[in-house]
Image 1 (tube, rainbow, N blue to C red):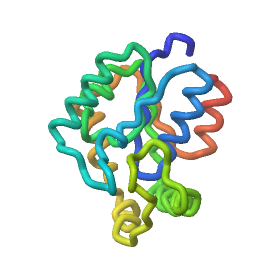
Image 2: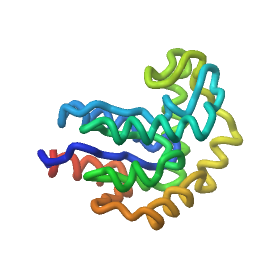
Image 3: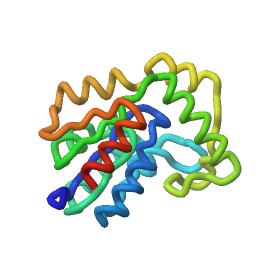
Length: 169
């Protein structure tokens, strides 16, 4: 796995993309590009979509090495085609709901460092319901079909992720 210079980690809300990015960044000595930090502005305001997409594309193209984690819907072509490896955390919807609740408990009093000022963790029933219903999974699947990555690893459970990490890193 020494040849990996560009890794994208994709998956639904709360699936553990950032956590995995931090683990791999440490093991592989790669910088992390938190796509969410480009998308969100202060106090959970969405940044301009075209501007955001251009910033993400420019950053991914400019940097020689990276781990990109976050929403794939803003620059799917670049995140999938420029990556040496794409890891898709394709957990069950109920597990993603559980992870969203767990993240809220952990970060409700201290914001996640990768997010802008004023982006405190929120737990909304509507958001949990969307995750339970599959949320962005269909968008992820569409992106994979449209821009098939050369090297896609689909991880279906935390135990399979642990096994993958143990065997490869």
